[in-house]
Image (cartoon, rainbow, N blue to C red; front, side, top):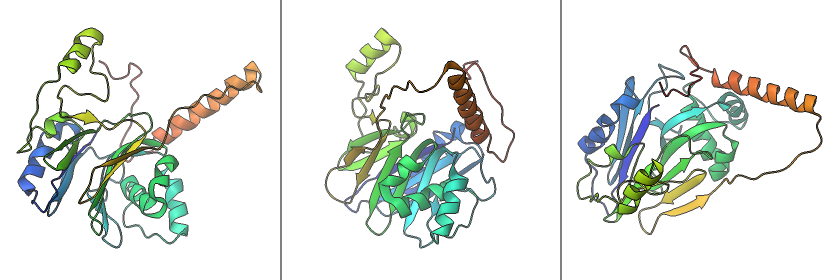
Length: 267
């Protein structure tokens, strides 16, 4: 679960902290354990947390060691211990055991190449205080949701649309195409949402926006199919079993008990 939300109003127009708190309050059901906000002039973001990794030290936003960058993050990075060891060897200090801090250090060290190094699910927002630049990224399969709206010279984002509806100076008109989608196929087809002014950041995309100019979006991952004919049936079974066991082992990395819902949590 967990959830993030923020608003880059731009043009020097301040983002009131109470608006950020209202955005986070709208998604308290996603993260009942903890909350936090950062207000920095015409930018601010926050999050609601369901504590899984580093319960005591994983409070967000998390800041880089030099104070330049801050991050809020919804998801879990399953290979963060391996990434952390590599980053420590490169000289990065860590003050928590949180995968959020590892993700931020990965971005500081590798830039946008970091997204392909991550094994996990994520919707992340990183604020560069020096350049006043916001970076948003969504995992390759789109497991974690991330909605954006660009209105009146600014950009706002959230894990759920309800966090955007509290923003002043914003319009939200029902998109007739989205309503058609819902009644025809049972859901709104991406990147649309039920509102014309709101869309999703697509899976495997990174968005960057600075104090002036338009937001820039780049796709960092696309699915590719490569046929293999080098294994016997027994070898395919063994490789599949090995990959499944390795994936389950990584998913069980937690500071709290974990369970598995074979129904997909529908019930």
